[in-house]
Length: 68
Image 1 (cartoon, rainbow, N blue to C red):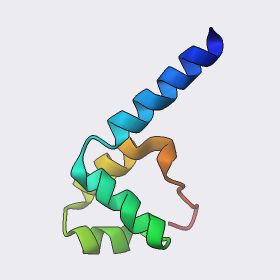
Image 2 (image 1 turned 90 degrees about the vertical axis):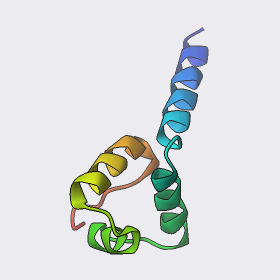
Image 3 (image 1 turned 120 degrees about the vertical axis):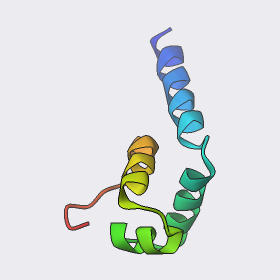
Image 4 (image 1 turned 90 degrees about the horizontal axis):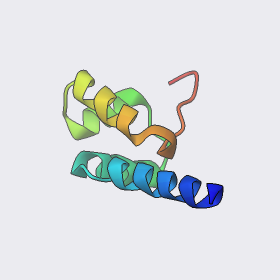
């Protein structure tokens, strides 16, 4: 019963995270190589607030290092 709830929450996180095409593109870019915030910003050509929003929505699907 508890495992079912955890599994459902995991699927919910994944589907919500992948709902927007920019977030899917970010994940594809990061799958190729690690990128800094500034590099992602430059590649996507969006404002920093927009990028921060999408990175926040990716949640645990990305890893954030302390040095950016």
